[in-house]
Amino acid sequence: MSGRIHPSAAANGPEPPSEKPSIEPTSILSLPDDLIVSCFARVSRLYYPTLSLVSKRFRSLLASPDIYHARSLLGRTESCLYVGLRSPPHHNLRWFTLCQKPDQSLTKKKEKVKSSGNVLAPVSVLGSPSVKWSDLFTVGPYLYAIPEPIEHGNVSVLDCRTHTWSDKPKELIGEVVGLDTSFDLQCPGACRVEDIIYYYNCSTDTIWTNNKTLCWRELEVLEGLPKFARYTSVKMAEYRGKLVILWDKYVSKNGYKEKVIWCAQIALKRGIGKVIRGEVEWLDAVLTVPKSCKLVCAIAATV
Image (cartoon, rainbow, N blue to C red; front, side, top):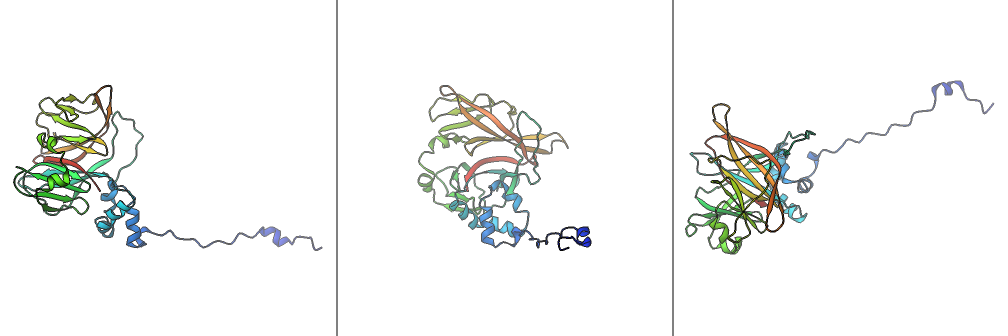
C-alpha cells in the first residue's frame, strides 16, 4: 500500500536538520584603528591603564590625541584625578592617576565604608618642571602650575591629554585660569567644590569650609574617616563634584621603611542654614611607596 511506512525509515527516525556553518566572533584586535578608538572613547578613563596592558597597539592608541578628540565629539569627557609625588633626591614630580585595579572583582561583603577598587597608576609625563609652585589650577584638560613667587618665571602648563609640559607667559594666570583665584592663592592647599572652599587644618585635624567669606565652619559628620597624625601629609581635591582626600600612613612592617597612600571620596550634603555634612562613600589604600616619598599635590582635570 502506498500509505505503508517503510521499516527502515521508521527505525532511523526523522532526518536531523542540516548544520549551519559556525560564525567565529570577530576579535577587537582585527578592527581598524579608527573603530577601536571609537570604542575606547566610550569607556571611562578609569580603565585605560588596564586596557593599555593588553598590547602595544592598545597602549599607542590610548596615548593618541585622536581618542580625546573622539571623547569630546561624543560628549564623553570626564574628570580624572592626578596625584604628584616627590622622591628625594629627585626634584621632579612623579605623576599618578586614579584608575580601576586590573584584577578587581566584585564582592558581596557588607562593609561600613565601601571599597572602590581604585589604585594609583603611574603616568609618563614629559618635561616635568622642577621649580617650586605656589599652587595648581586646572581649566579643562590643562593644569597650570603657578610659580613661587608669582612675580617670577613663566607658568608651566601640563596638557593632560598628551601628558606633556610647556611654558607660558605668567600673564595667562588672569586670562586663562580666571580672575577669581586670589582667595585660593591666599589659602594654599585649599580646594573648591562648587561655590565652597575646603581647607584641612593640620593643627586641629579638621576640615573647614568657607563660602568665600571670612566665616569658616567645620565640616560635620565624617564617620569612617580616620584621625590624621600631625606628621601626616594630607591633600584634597574636587573630583566629579565630590571631595577627595589623600593622605600617607607609615607601615610598621619591615621597620617603617614604606608608607601607604590612602584615598577617600566624600559626598557633600548641605544641611539647615550653612551647615555642610560629609559622608565617606569609599576609602582605599591606593599606592605603597618608600618612606622618603612625599605626597605633594592632588588635582582633577577634565579629559
